[in-house]
Amino acid sequence: MDPREPAPLTWHRKIDSPKTVLSEFNLSLFEKIQLSSLGFRLCRQVIEETSNGRVVMIDPFTKRRLTSCHGVPLGGIGAGSIGRSYKGYFQRWQLFPGVSDEEPVLADQFSVFVSRPNGKKCSTVLSPRNEEMLKGGAISGIESWDWNLNGQKSTYHALFPRSWTIFDGEPDPDLKIICRQISPFIPHNYVQSSYPVAVFTFKLINLSESPAEVTLLFTWANSVGGKSEFTGNHFNSKMMGENGVQGVLLHHRTANAKSPVTFAIAAQETGDVHVSECPYFLISGSCDGFTAADMWREIKENGSFDHLKANETSVASEPGSSIGAAVAASVTLPPKEVRNVTFSLAWSCPEVVFPCGKIYRRRYTNFYGTHEDAAANLVHDAIMEHYHWESQIDDWQRSILLDERFPEWYRVTLFNELYFLNAGGTVWTDGSLPFQSLVTIKERKFSLDISSSCCKDLTGISSQNDTATDVLYRMTSVLEKINTPVASKCAFGTSLLRDGEENIGQFLYLEGMEYHMYNTYDVHFYASFALVMLFPKLELSIQRDFAAAVMMHDPEKVQCLSDGKWAPRKIGGKI
Image (cartoon, rainbow, N blue to C red; front, side, top):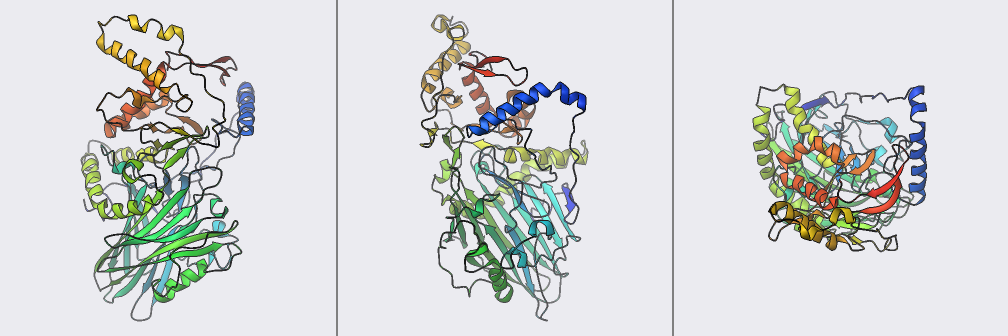
């Protein structure tokens, strides 16, 4: 298969296709009466947890926008996820545990500018205009950009972990553009699959007898979704890597005690492609400066940022204002010729901070460290290595896609439903013990008691069953190791590893974005086949965590939501 062209089987949709409107589930009057006591307990729990600043496990009272057809998300496994819809919007931001912001950040876009010798010019953002989202935009902001794409001749193809968007004669009728999106979801690969990075390659095909000057523009807001771009104190800086990779770092100072995030957007300069950067433009706000409209005008008039006099590092943004950055790749396209342009996006969010204050490091930090500027190295390596990633993905998918014993929809769905291992609130840690946030160090300690019934007379167990004896002895020692203020309340399965065994880290994924419960064992039973077949070491890691948790005992009384009865939070010897 030619990776530059869509796979033989994909989920596909025209970009101008209307959004699918989902119907909501409603309870009958009888069901409401029958479930009223449960609703009362849920309401009380929501009030208690919210008042104490904790995340609610289940909150049926918060209105959620129902969406579908999200497109293939970006990134590997367990390092955060950013969605990208079939219309090209970057949305569904999942960079922090249990948080999913559905709304797109409209300044995050790819755009194209085309100029012909006869003076004909055309330009557009490569996403259709959304009047509702752009409503109220200032003339200095992205409202002033050319939102000219109607999408009638453009088609999106999805086959996780890749997607292809074909712009067939839009905006230039004699120019075909194929944008290919690749993320490092590679079965049995436990290194690159943990990277928070994605690559976008553009294949430009000139169908005309005349040459064309083409500039592709990648813009990015200093935002982690929602209203975060307006919190202030964010700044951007230029980056220059090896092998012609250059771009901009966007340093985001996250509010509400969340871990800071650094984004990197970059492109590769080659003999055919010239890359230039705009490290700063003002998207919105009352500050004076180089605006989004100014940035757009600069590219439209000059085709690059070479004439732009900008500092290497921008000043920090003020609260209430929003800033962004851009990378432009310019190429001369001879008649009937093809050129390729490669961009990359990465984000560095090395620490996972849970509401209880425990902090874990992500798996990818084993290879890139915890410095936030690791994003610069990630985009460089992704641009240089993505062809190798694709060959491994092709080897994995080819035999299934060509197996005609199964219907086409089934073969496509087998791959596309794997999106949840990326965008299911997944967390993949480096396998080390957590440390406690200073902000929450004064929180109550967890009482870890070992019930006499489950650990009684372990030393007297017969050695006839050596395996069972060994497991129980080791679990007893694990209980002693994890009975510390920081590690308490943690099922730390990596402590069960034998000397010399690889510590692959711990893996978590949510039951659903509406249910903030990680690795629920009954639901995982049905989903575990994907991990067993593709990432068996991660499946083994989950089982180790449950094995370590079996002997944990927490006598604290909690009220069961199902029937209102009070019971110990965790009984030793049970899952």
